[in-house]
Length: 196
Image (cartoon, rainbow, N blue to C red; front, side, top):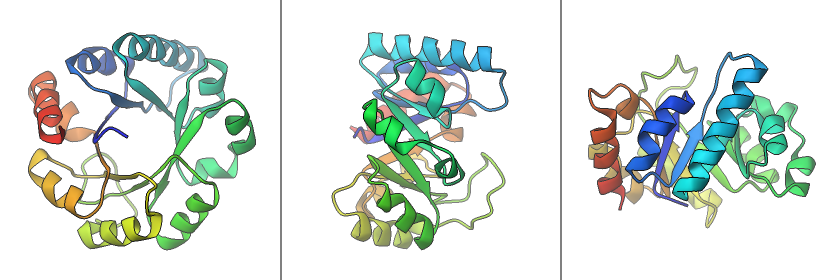
């Protein structure tokens, strides 16, 4: 799994940043009509194919399967409705969000391709019901998941990377540090350099 995991909220951001050398990107689409979801996912799939980038579709697992995407990310609430057997049958891999021990147990029972823990640090992205998890919890998660890739997310910066990787994260997921940067392309290149 690539050590740099970019997360974007629109296909236009993906079009701008993937050509910088991004090899793992999640398209996290919220509150869009189905036709627009379909358009953006299909466009992202095609662009990622051209650049040799792994696309991960957030939440919209049915559309991902329909549009022949190979990877989805699911939150805990998605597990209530997602058809894991159908995903497996179609060969679609999936990663799962976790925040506490019960969620980690639940995630591991589904044998995902990775688990994510967050927010590691305080995040500007959205109001979180969880306090920052910290590096010690990241270490505990890595001890629990073993060889399964562990994704750290929440408040990450290139300066915080050494501690995050030392604590056991295999990949660093980034949203606001890039999308809110004055120059998102330059910031993406900085992240790529920091994670190589």
